[in-house]
Image (cartoon, rainbow, N blue to C red; front, side, top):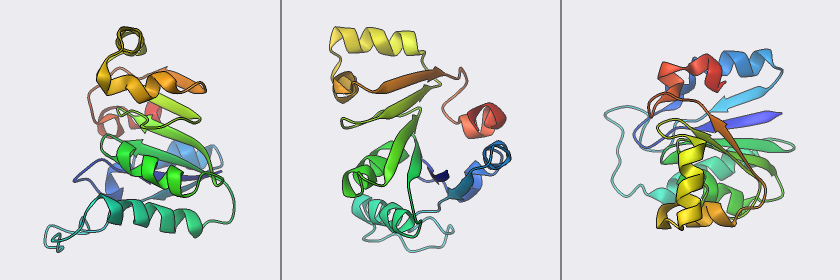
Length: 159
């Protein structure tokens, strides 16, 4: 399976470097992305917004012949949400790493800074930040207790 890895805001493809080996070992094709404006500290960022980042992910999806899995860390969750919306027939699953789905559909939520039990409590209480997640019928929760950047603290387990 082709897996597109979308970093959180301000991060680049290199943040996935220790996550990719277990995925490759499992037989996947891995595509870590550096989003527009994040190529270097000198890269021009003026005028680059969320739409540009979503378009970059959609371009990566279009370059792959077949189904993909999208993985979004933190702010990358909003980006993959837009990409799923643009290419729903090509995305087999959306995986949100310490992030949350913003729409209905098949999703996996990897909880790092809080547990899936805490998340379930928030959903049950009707917390506004998880209202879209509460509407999803096909969702899987995976606990990976660590900090907000599991690609640095527990990369093998995240992979």
